[in-house]
Image (cartoon, rainbow, N blue to C red):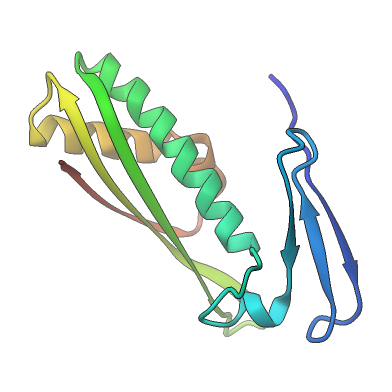
Length: 145
């Protein structure tokens, strides 16, 4: 299996510096990062590790859920997955990701609401990015559209 690479170039201090994260393997983009904007309510045109984790998790979850639905005898027509990744101060010092909230709405043939919810729980447990986030609370809200 492949290894994917990103690169970040950072200049300056945490509060006054900034950088750019490059998605090196795919070459699809380079994005600004800044701690003050990371910790602010408005991103102001920059990304953050939390947004990148949310993107990784939502896309991985969607892929895994489509596979689990098929294994359960259903046919995924469309899935919309939204991930919210929350950064909070850590009482032990620094910051930590406190939770990941996953919301999925799906159009699926061959599964009822209970079957879809069960498939979503299985996807949550077996998605490689979910596994990487072990130690973080992941909540799931799954329903058919």
